[in-house]
Length: 293
Ligand code: 13P
Image (tube, rainbow, N blue to C red):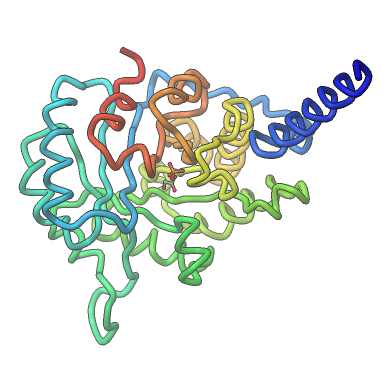
């Protein structure tokens, strides 16, 4: 009987370890092979907390959250706050946030300026609703709407021509992570998606590292994994655009919540977070924004 109990305990323990090992994070095997000796100065960059509401909330639901959020974060000065509501709520949210410390952005755009492109929204239309930012190349757009590095590149240039700041999302899928090609994927996204920018453009955009396999799961990658990838991103960017690499902000995005945010924010190359689920309610997003308090 005693032996049976020992075997049972051992079995349960092994299964749990496997489950944890699988879902929390893969060992940083592919990452540790790369010596990331690039050190940037985080104090020169303003931290940015962005909430991506994806396809959630009607206009009235959006307004209700933003009103509460506005009050809750009115005293925040050291962190830039940004919300990406749905297109339909942009104008109303802009009216509500105009005189506040909350900026707004659109979740996508089309690169053409006008014409017969039914269902698309131009950079000027986005700018007109009061947006200062636009999300480009989110993994859900890559996955469901055929977004590629080529279309990402066209969108970045179109956004910047209109004076919008792109937040460009890059990151590996589960399959890519499991086959140890994370760094190759990141490098490809950057070399193709971020090609051909002027120094000024290269300096003002924001990159978001979103490991696709951890988005929406509630289980983020470890802060060490994120830091290693962020440092790699900065290193690749330094090769592409020299000193712009020190200036740009690189956000981490995948299952960030008020409990785990500060561990990410302690890392030297993580300049903020792009948050999905935990940004949908004012209470959790305001806690997250005030991570250092
Ligand atoms: P979650 O925070 O829900 O994982 O979403 C992350 C994301 O996709 C933000 O753009």
